[in-house]
Amino acid sequence: MMGLLSDITTYHKQTTRAITPENPTGGKGCAAMTNSDLGHSRKGTASISLECNQETTIAEIEGPGMIQHIWMTVRNQTELGSFVLRDLIIRIYWDNSNDPAVVSPLGDFFCNGFGEYCDVNSLPIVVNPTGGFNTYFEMPFAKHARITIENQHPKVLSSFFYTINYALVDELPKNHMYFHAHWSRCRITEKQNDYTLIENINGPGYYVGTYLALTALERYWWGEGEFKFYIDDDDDYPTITSTGTEDYFGGAWAFHKYGPDGHPYAKNFCTPFLGYPYQSHRDITRDRFRTAKLNPIHAFGDDGLPQHGLYRWHLTDPIAFEDSLTVTLQQIGNDDIHLFEREDDVASVAYWYALSPIGSSIPLPGREERLPR
Image (cartoon, rainbow, N blue to C red; front, top):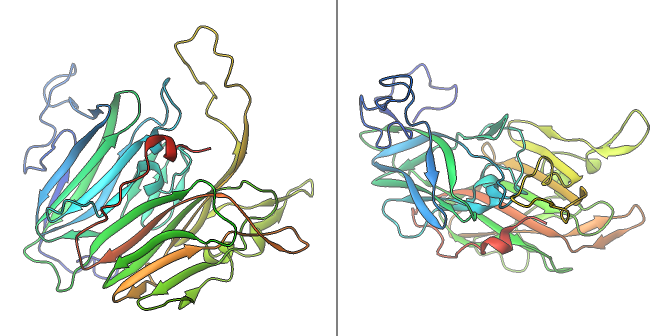
């Protein structure tokens, strides 16, 4: 299949298609057919509505083929709640499997945890102003692909926009792998009990990425914990570990910088493979918030717990596993006197490829358990 730059000048026989609200089947010559007040074929169906408590199929594609790009956008709050991005669930099913290979809150899948927009400038995930979600992860499938969005928000979302760009091919390469992603969360981790991102996923496969959404529940530096990769028959100890959390995400020394006033802060950054795009200790959910109440007085103030969003992509250094893989993270802090065990609120998305199209049968936590602090 086509690489980013290496073989773009070599022709590969494929049929290019796109699924949008204007062309929900991706049919040839079937786009931009709907009418509007502007006239015939003038942007008549740019978006769809997502009904409450329904899993809406937005794409069904017969293979073999390759999803090459997905773009989506939706408002991030309504008068009935501020966390639409945690209330929407994206699922992707391969080859008619009943278990989704991808299952995650929509925002977290696109490295936008905490239910808030955040610009991201990386290679496989890009989020542009304002809330333009893009993924360039290649997603091959042999027989069938189905993408759904479930709306667990307590309101119909009337404007959900999307485009799925894909290619149909005569055949896929031998040993092609299927894309997987799974969201996890522990609202309060336990001291000396490592947080688990994924546990005993089946190989063969490549682990290719991590998104971490950490809400600090204790003071001082939160990022001394090591990521651990238990490969195949690893038991008590992993084969691969990082030297610290910020080290795993490509930074060092707590991302430490000094401002003009001499006050220290952690510097955010985005690069193609490593990033720390988001940090906040301010609650913005009531900025310009409107309810049906004449005198909404209870949700005032903007104090928020410290929140940190980070990503790492193992696209040039995938972690290969033959039989199984477990990934965990320690919660260890540093108060400049000594290291100490912590208890924090940790959520994550793990991304990997595997030869099997079958996903996880483990359901996501319910809406209330997913809400950010």
